[in-house]
Image 1 (tube, one colour):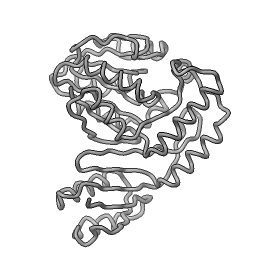
Image 2 (cartoon, one colour):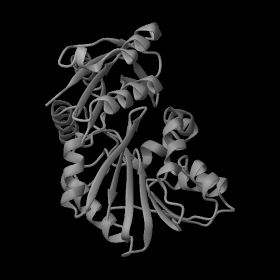
Image 3 (cartoon, rainbow, N blue to C red):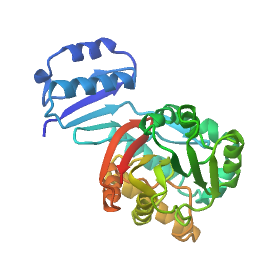
Image 4 (cartoon, helix red, strand yellow):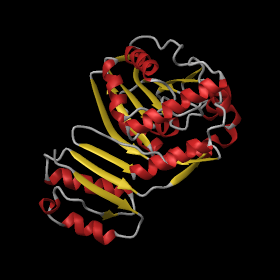
Length: 323
């Protein structure tokens, strides 16, 4: 398999990007290349350039400088993420450093008890929207994946409806059903969009009925990475049944960079559950993401006819599954 391996460094090397993009691809095939770049837009240009020049390249791996970001007043390693299709593109931080930082963070937090999901967000409602601005670019991209004839949409884990702002700006008459565990967040959503056609359900989307062949589209943004594979597959089956023929499920979520991360976080969650006497049936706020391969496998096992990975933005990997 032909492969390119590149390193994204801090903003200081535009001339190297220019030099690379104007050079012949054959000259560096199979060798390591270093590309200093100051923005992901340049990364996309490089990817497009590679695809155009050599259509048989089916894997491009890039590593970006490691950084951290704060979430809910805690310091955690910045997420690794990936996107993969027939011509795969994986963008990730330095793997070794990322995993080292993740283990260090887990060690620091080892005695922190798990929090029940709805209560976790209830206690952070004041800072939630500010924190979630990490994904403002990702929110803005969602309308681009919505068909213009979409009339009914289901939003799972809708929170305060941050993703709906860009959707309503392009499709003001779309009918939305939103499901979330946190009543305070739903009240804020209701207040923001009181003129829109919205039905809100405060409940567990694993238990709530979606109906059959009801929706043109189902979306979920940064909500499903707290659940084990078996539970997710059942949910994916229910989502598929709720979609009209040809309907699409768009998931944007935290994806584990590798099986090591997936297994490490799952073991730690199990340990914390056992320590706190918390059953598997109780929803807790702890990240147990799957790798992209495992996530897409679950969607296909649930009966979706096609699964695509259109983009990855600020740690949110977009996965599109078609009924």
